[in-house]
Image (cartoon, rainbow, N blue to C red; front, side):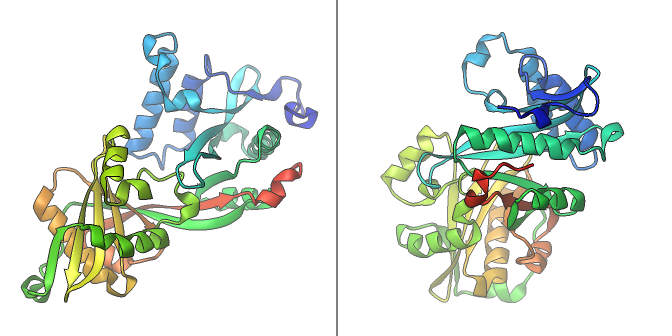
Length: 337
């Protein structure tokens, strides 16, 4: 339910209303493209293309099937008949957060450059929070690029707390510089991940990919673990995954997962003993490139400022860093104004 303060602005011709997916999707896509032109990557442009495609085909048979854009809700700010602000709400259901628990992600908060510094982003956010609090008690999350100081300040003022900083790295698909010692080390063995490796691997996975964010990741612990149940899980989820273990001096020091995708880059999942992080990264990534070639780039989501030197040595470059924030549960019972 919208409050009166959320609906009205200084002018009766300027107001907030719920997103109308039957007529707003293309306009919202144009607004997002305008506002984030400097930071949109290949996957961002693909998302906008899908948004526009959904807008054009809502009456087609394909809309009878699942489309993530149709699951989206949100609010827009309209001024004299023009949409000048947007906020999207995307529900997620995480497998392990706990099973079946829903999380609401606030995203695509965009305000036309000509209408900034008028409190529109804040009003959109407070309206969304008021609505979500009345729906249920699901956690509310959002993420902001680390360099967006103004947005970080806004969300902090509304009660959001920083939880994690994550950097997405992209590879340039070149082999790391030759390491004669590493290449001649007969004590190094890389092989398909074995069942007995899972005990250490799952601990490293939890350290590197926090459980509080498992609802968001494209791979889950269920998909990574060995066994028949996991195989069926991946089959029905249409999830393709290969994993390799690095044994050094008869000790497991890391596991690398490779997940082919239809996006710009394939996903990598790196789970290692931090003591040997550089050695594990170099050995596993070199093996992966030699095995698969360099036809497609790789994307790695990793904790902020962790293994930077080793990643750069292996041909990765920093794509962006996101600050993940959530609204504490105890705060959500209050009306944010």
